[in-house]
Amino acid sequence: MPGIPMNDGAHLFFQKRGYIHSWGDTGCYDMDQMLEDFSYNEHSIGDTINGITYRWAEINDLDSILICVSDADKSFIQYYQNEDLYQKDSNELILIAEKNKEVLGAIMLNINFLEDMGSVGATATIQKYRNMGIATNMVLLGTKYLKDIGLSRAFIGYTYTQIVHMYGKAGYKICMEYFMGEKLV
Image (cartoon, rainbow, N blue to C red):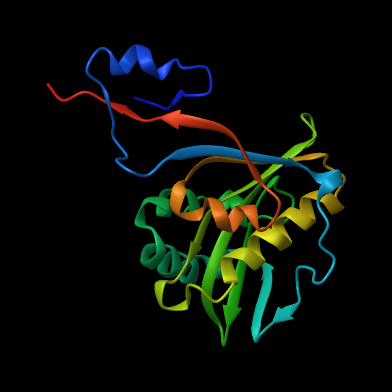
């Protein structure tokens, strides 16, 4: 089942009926922050940080991005295959980290001017390049972009325990925890 909010105890109804948290020890969370509180001015999209360049993806990057995402988290491939994400006038964008024409990481941004909110997510970094700050830099740069275009709130949906700290480095805080229910029959 989709996530049941745990903040108000609704998940207890399902637990009493034999459902278990199907993600085991891994939690599932939404995170957010007000962008007026976000402060990061060290770098911008287009900059090179420690030899890695962070830039907007273009359609000709698609194959390289899919190689990166496949190595990082195969479940994200379905999202990155959408060619509309690679259009300049889209409200959904992909920021990539590259070195020597190899895509090392990717993150998706969604812009919703009607709700005055944007999001970052589906963050992917090639496994051999993890723990080098690439994902954190993409989150920081993506969040800065959301603030720079005038949005007031940034959101991350359905993230998990192992990367909550990475998003936290960019100022995101948990606003909802979910029970990912499963019942074995």
